[in-house]
Structure formats: C-alpha cells, structure tokens
Image: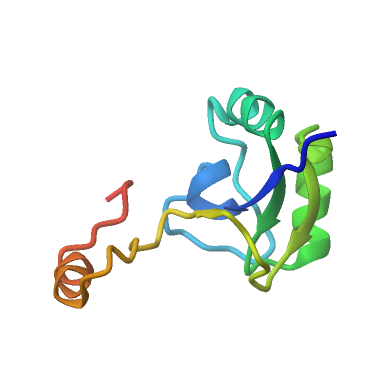
Length: 111
C-alpha cells in the first residue's frame, strides 16, 4: 500500500459555513462542496481535522455530518504534515519582505 502524505484541514471557514461569528457552543453547518472535496482528497492523502475548537465537539460534528470516515483524527496541535489548509494563513515564499506585504494586505475570503 502506498504511503499517503498528511494534510491538516481547518474546520471554521474551510469545512463549515463559519463567517467570523464564533460561538463555542455551536459549529456552523458543513459548507457546500466539502463532502466531494473530502472524498477526492482522502483517496490520496491522510487527513486530520486541525482546529482550536473543543476536540470532542469537533469529533461529534464530523459524525453528525457523516464525514468522520475521511479523517484519521481531530487535533489541536501541529503535527508533521505535507500541507495545511486554512482560511487564515500566509504561505512563506522564501522572501520576508514579500511575506510582510502579504500580511499587511491579508483579507479573509469571506470579508
């Protein structure tokens, strides 16, 4: 069996309909297209849900949305991974000045 590279996927703003209105007791509904995205991605990559939310609540959300089978686990700490998919990140391109510019001009996709 071929080794699958690991990808960490953020929950809020990536897999769900989160738009900045954080409520620790409520995780928004799954985003349209997320199921197909996870089905495709999980064929070639090992996936972990990477979230700052309560892990038990996040695991329950995965089960409720019937997508838990695509994930090897739910984590809140960075582990060795090929990629991280997040709505609040800047990719380091080897140039600190370029990264500073990206930080200054950063906009969350839903704003």
